[in-house]
Length: 214
Image (cartoon, rainbow, N blue to C red; front, side):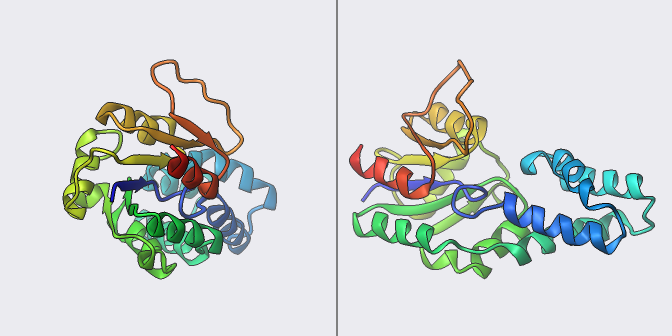
C-alpha cells in the first residue's frame, strides 16, 4: 500500500476559480470597476503572494480604512466559502484507494484556511491524512515535509508518488526526496531545466491513471 502524496490548491481543489469569484464579489462591494479583477489576480500571483501583502495592496489601491487583519480574514474565509470538491476528484481518489494507494495531502499555506478547505468540502472523507506547512513548520519543496507526511500515515516514503501543479514546490520537492511525480500542467509548458516530472497530466483523473499505470 504505497503513499500518494497530493497537493491541495489547483490539484485536489480548484483555487483559481474560488479566488476569482471572491475577488469579483469583493470588488463589487467596494465599488471598484469589474475590470480590476485582472489587477487583483496579478497581485495574488496564483496564491504565491503573502496574504498580508495582498491585503496591503488592496488597502493602498482603494484607500480602504479596513484594518489589514480584517482584510486577511476576508481573504481566507471568502475563498473557502467558494471552494467546492469536484465529484470527479472524489472519484479519482476512491479509485486510487481501491487500487491500494493511500492518499495524503501535503500543502503549503496557513493551517486555518487549508484545514477549513479540506473539512468543509468533504475532502477529508477521501484522504487518509494531511500535512499543512504552517503547522508542520516546514514547507514544500523541503523534503522534510514529505517525510513528515509518511510519518503521519505510518508508512514508508519508498514507493510513493507525488502529484501537484507547482513546478518548484511539488515536482522540485519530489525530486529532492527521490520520488516519481506527476505534474498538472494547467495549460503551461514545462520550462525548468534543473529537474522534470516523471509524467505530465491535464487533471487529477489523468494523474491518478498515470500513477496506477506507472
